[in-house]
Image 1 (cartoon, rainbow, N blue to C red):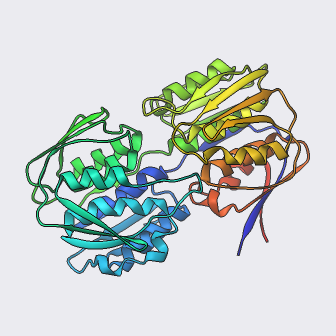
Image 2 (image 1 turned 90 degrees about the horizontal axis):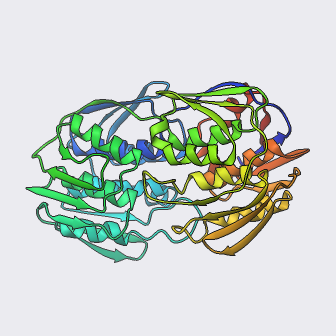
Image 3 (image 1 turned 30 degrees about the vertical axis):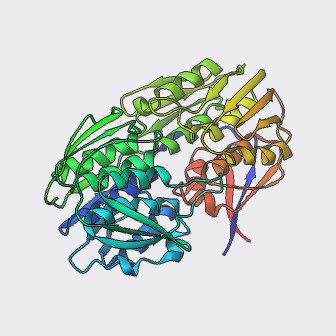
Length: 421
């Protein structure tokens, strides 16, 4: 049954909010357990739709999966694991399923997988993934709505990625840890979820050098062991709640957030006029006013992540002057700005990758629709700021990446309800 958020804006937020496990790190972590037949335990798992779908995919292939606590999974991908049992319908629902490719290539000589689904933010081809895996000996063939993969042995190689692709880097890492010899990955993505995958694999027995840099050196191992691993906190959820907190008249503490994962983002917020304090594992936000315009461009880590841009945009509608947002990655990422314009935001779409925001403009509650995970979060923030009632539809997209967002906001004082349609 479809659901929506009904938000009555203008409420002051205060108190504390705790950030959960990182959805974008949970996907690689779940894929990594396929590299061993031994039992693995993953804790701090986010209870979001993308994780649930990937768990279903693992179960469908024959993995033994059970929840042993609210946010902890026990998984054993034993000898009866069969990639021929992958449910194509589930794969097509979630982009996160693309991460199965690298792990399955390490474990099986041949398999097929449907085209991964995910956000409606433009073309997301996996050419970089395919070329990278080809360097290790994995051939791929398109067949209708499937990719068909074949390989004899996996052999390490020097691979120069065509772009700073997070998931391509992760897929290559997953394959390389069981390849024969040494693999060097250049132009590797270094985002927190890539680092987290590497730390998990090292705990499983992998040998990886250069973690956190754009060059990784991996010595292939014959086998990996099981592990007990806790997923890193969600930097995107942290960024979302930090921006939502920027309008507090009191103070808000965002707990279980790692500031070093968002250095440039926090610096940009301070440039805009947000008053905040960074701790080892928290960010505290204080009452601020007179927000200023700025220019923001998505950049590879340690730059400002593309997922941070949508949640920052509502803040820019309340900032004096002309702001520019530039996202060179996805050509449809900025479509959600049409929903913000319905609320009264003064936004000019320059081209598929750039928008200009003219502030400060009041926002008014209307009926709007979530296009993807981060766009949905942006609309929720806008609804919290708006005068009157905002209805956000298609919140399945939000649930894909945020665990009970409305409950966390309610505890902070927001008037937001989940309503069945």
